[in-house]
Amino acid sequence: MNAHEVDLVVIGTGPGGEALATGAAKAGLRVVAVDKHLVGGECPYYGCIPTKMMVRGSDVVAEVRRAAAVAGEATIAPAWSVVARRVDQEATTGWDDTIAVDRLRDAGATVHHGVARLDGPGRVRVELADGASEEYVAARGVVLNPGTRPAVPPVEGLAGTPYWTNRDAVRLSELPGSLVVLGGGPIGCEMAQVLARFGVRVTVVQHGPRLLPGDEPEASALIEKVFAEEGIRVLTGVELTRAAYADGRFTLDLDTGERLGPDKLLVAAGRTPNLDDLGLETVGLDPAARTIEVDEHLRAGERLWAIGDVTGKGAFTHVSMYQSAVALRDVLGQEGAPAAYHAVPHTTFTDPEVGGVGLTEQRARDARLRVRTGSTPLEQSSRGFTHGAGGHGLIKVVEDADRGVLVGATAVGPAGGEILGFLAVAVHAAVPVETLRNMMYAYPTFHRAIESAIADLS
Image (cartoon, rainbow, N blue to C red; front, side, top):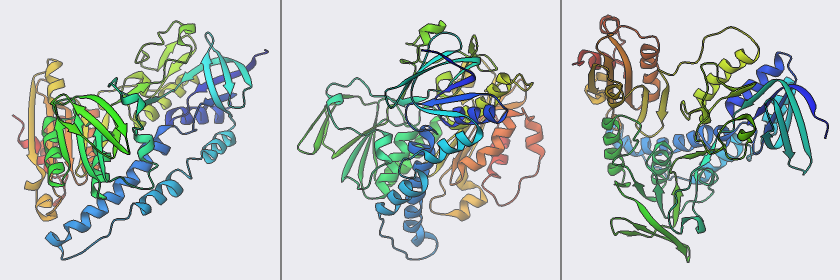
């Protein structure tokens, strides 16, 4: 087979890969972009966009139910069909990536649906969906953005059952009567609350000691309290030991001796990197690794870059997009700031939202910093007080006392992800705590609670 000579091959077109391929093509490079599934990746079809439509629907349901406490009687008849229609038609256009493919082609890139594998530095073989194959030699090199897929824990009997992952959950047209969510991370918590608000009896089974283990314990405790108030059962420190399915129901055995019998099971137990079928061994990398090591310009080897979840810098769309800009500059030989990860933000879109940036208190202590923390309940702020029902929340800040700057912060509340923007700037730019202490905060806002948390540093 004669290899086609191009400038750049991008393997995987999640948000970061798509953005990089688009930018490189617009800069005049001969770009080939390959994806085995949908151009755009997990985020627009199974993650960020459709799930936030689901969250929006559930939040409206919850607000109507809170009306009696703040505005008078109101009723709502929740209809999942409305949410399902929005996800299908508005978010994913029926899980069709034609718009994304056309966007890339209009930028000047060649787009393939198929399986791409490395075949040495700068060389890529592509098995196309129609059974044909192509080979490319890339003068600039190759960018890897393969992403991840839902992980399936090695539980006896689980593989033989019709369990769901997040990819199934976003396609739901009808809801079950009862559901067990295996996993208490961001995906599990968001899905549990959404479906419970539409009438599903939900139990969350989390093997660790608390929900949202990547966040501050105070945030986890608050979410667990809210879940209890909304009728969601939470089992922490519990392992699923065996799963079976028969006659339309699951049988789930826990290590506590309890047996659960839900209609459906949603597995939200983490993600598996798509590194096992990339041909990494042909460029001196380990295909069994969970991450690809990259430098501050996202270089992973000779004429090779990697971006996104597989770099281990944070499994978030915004990390991939950030990295794509850094890597694109390097591909194009342009100057620019190297990648930095001391202020990676994230938000879990439960109600209340849980936003975090930088280090938690424990991670800061593990890094041997001299730590001071400050916190305040959001309900004690004027805005939290006037908000009334649904105003749960807190602000927590983590200071490196030797440097006098924040190295981490958490914002939980009705707009936790938006409040976080203020704190992300403070952590990213290493704004002196004294500056934060002496600045003016608008009144009465949720973010004004940051002032109280700063004052509480001790």
